[in-house]
Length: 347
Image (cartoon, rainbow, N blue to C red; front, side):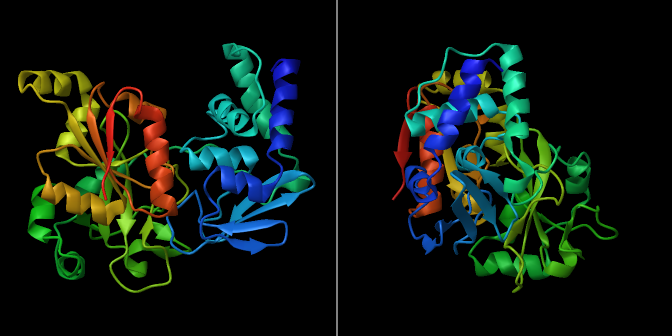
């Protein structure tokens, strides 16, 4: 990384050294709790309703740590989490967003060599004495996720009753291929939470998660009984960001945006897309509009790769909650689409 960009990186880091100010700029301070040196906010790494993520200023730098999901990072890591990026693999993009927040100008765009050097420099800059926890190595999606989904069974029993209680018709959910139940027999090692299997914690509902090209890359486990564990879980020890829930039309759209655009042109109507927040709303929207592409997002879902699959001129309805997390997701999506799509925020 060139000296000028190294200096710019450190200038950005220093300018974002006030925890409360950074949280305000990232819109994380709504409903936050004050603590020494900073705030406790709703975690940008996972979906929650009670603040559990500590963001503090220490020695002129921001350090963040979620006591629920164990997500952690510095100012750049926090910026990355809010924008659904990976600070290790997409650091140049993260740096540009952070510089914009800090009001610090950056040198001209870096070369490919500078890009790789920026990633290495970011990792090296995380001094062990300032880490809240050791950074995890870059993780992959579970390689057997698609096979696991195929093993999952039809909706029945406790899982079906749970959906009925939420006014989500199990038979229709199953018909549209939106959710299934845990398969019988041994579960993968990643289907665990704090040493217990998903079956033991009551995470019996399973929904598939798709990449930007419409391929199953992971799953999400949904708790159907009262328990202290999180309501929804990704596979343990594997990457969870950059994926979305997608109904059949959405999978087709992601797989071939050009074809979706052609069909819309024939119908003389824009491509229409619905983006919902979380599994329950995703299922509800998919049942209500089975003919429309419906995407489901959570913290870390949205990415530039996904945004690129939405055709120009598309009409995108954002059905995220009107709370801190929902506003953040809507802002992330709008930032990537507003120049070429028509965006509508549902009431």
